[in-house]
Length: 169
Image (cartoon, rainbow, N blue to C red):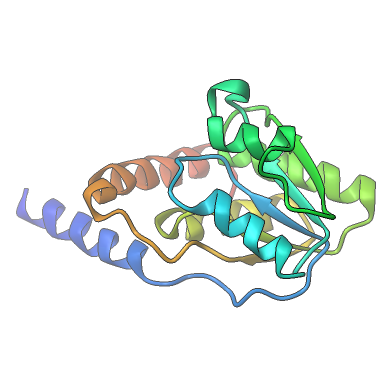
């Protein structure tokens, strides 16, 4: 029991380490679905700063995801940018990776910046790079909700196990 607790603590500490890339010019900024933890604003800010002309928003919750909906419907769209919203199938990080690959192939993209939270960055990057030949640059939000860390830890461990079982890496 103690060994398991220590292993989970070490994994949690590892997930909190920065695993991202510095933003560079890309064909699109991809915002992965999730909590209103700052990723929506950060993705929009990257587009407004000129890192890409297109914002690709994963919005599997549709109208129930208020902040993503605002990006998709125009209320919070970055000016002078194209916003493409999609609902991945399956509604998982792997589904997002497959959808990003399909959209990128159709548009001839070569590089994307992917925005998510820090605990999700390592797994999301692994899935994205497994699903596509794109140059994938992970650019996580800086803020970490430490109160949610136990939830992130369980979620990420389960995600890695599920991904291994399903052959995503």
